Length: 151
Image (cartoon, rainbow, N blue to C red; front, side, top):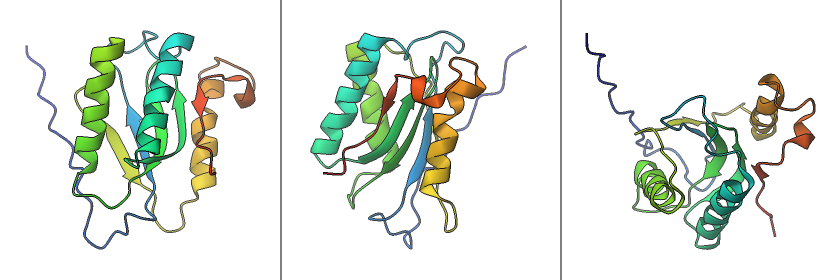
């Protein structure tokens, strides 16, 4: 019995969305669910460096990134560009897979925060993930978090 093949997710941004203000809640899973591939100090440091590098180059603005053992959750904004979100994320996943031997699932989940959805509320939700999974008792104790410096 074969499992049905998962369709690719659409990641097209509607033309009426202002990319300068849009914020996306992104979840990227590893293929080996249940195994810790991400919440490892050396891997986390390297992943956060790649996030920072893309921030410095203006590829994205990472409001927040949190690594669980699996997956990674992030709040990202993307400046106006001819590159689609799917390409930007896929290229990042490809690079990190090759350099850090992380086995990512083929696609990712993204949700654009709509009017009325609070970035702070979504960030708090993300930051509580390690508490909900009983990895720490207080969100502030989870070390695998990246917050961009607003300069």
